[in-house]
Image (cartoon, rainbow, N blue to C red; front, side, top):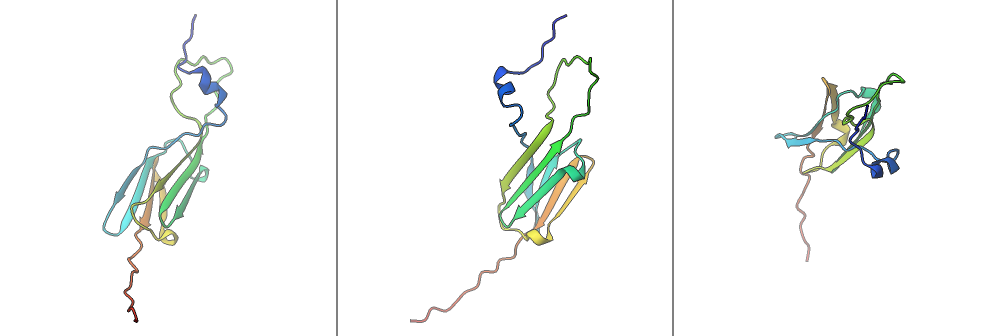
Length: 125
């Protein structure tokens, strides 16, 4: 019996160093910037979210359950291992008031927009 697994030899060279990249949605409401990503199969303790005033980074790891020793793989398309994604936000956010929730395999990060603190100063001349 012949088995075909859709992989490329070059992939094997970097198998331990390649990180997966998340697909994300970013949208804006009147008060918040929201980032959502489908992260099925990842436990909350295997996720990290880092927020700066103008950028969010999501990192994590999807652990593959052990297969039987004699299992024969025919197709392997799911990504297993570490992943990360950083995105520049469309405006500054209040990172200290941000919230992250994982529900039904979807991560939702809600970040309140930073209020415009611009002020006018008088020029003396």
